[in-house]
Image 1: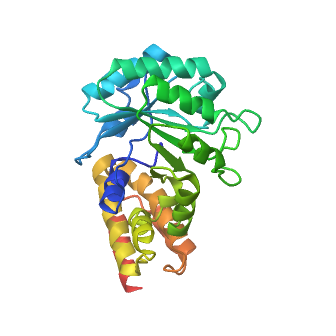
Image 2: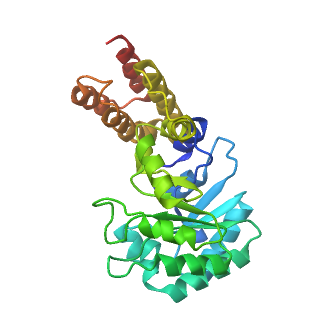
Length: 306
């Protein structure tokens, strides 16, 4: 998720149970990689195994160039995004807008797979809208193009993130695919993860927005599937994690941008753990006014004694 799954978040996700984490989506147009935003998205102070870089694009040769550049940058896997519903992405006929042109999908995937020696994955949606749910065709195209893993979000592009994710077509795609298939969408609790996994019979789950403010969800899901139970974090655990996350954000982005980036993550922690925090709005209102990285950490430390 652009703006969320940066290096600090990926580090915590894998530390807390995720089998692997995927980079924020970057453009396949490599001449734009010198921008500050893309440079930060490619930067990581952590060892990531495997290193998976997600790219988006609307032209087969451009995506292939991007794939080669990712391989040269040390990627172990490349994931092509054909699921992003953002207007600025779809307006340039990338992301989920590609689902309206199955021939172009086939061209992009086959050329990208042929351009590199490392595995290429695909992340997509059910289709463009409710009248055009062509994921079964897209899954077949992906398999025939040499894609080695397919992740499907249970909404169409026109759904954005509204309503509830649907999983029946994901289950059908899995049943008819020879490649690994992963289900995605609305997986925000261990119980929901088990429900989706049983329903779809997929090879695993992608968790995105459900981990905001609770990156320990990955281990909870594993524990619940394996044993039927999981641990709930206490206040001390969550506060220590918030401090660690904030420090990592400051290290990754620097003091000025890091202070701004930390605000949204702290807000997500407060929203996801309402049972642990009293006076949440007051706490966040004060945190949001802090302009210094050291003062952010100092203020978070005061929460231990409140």
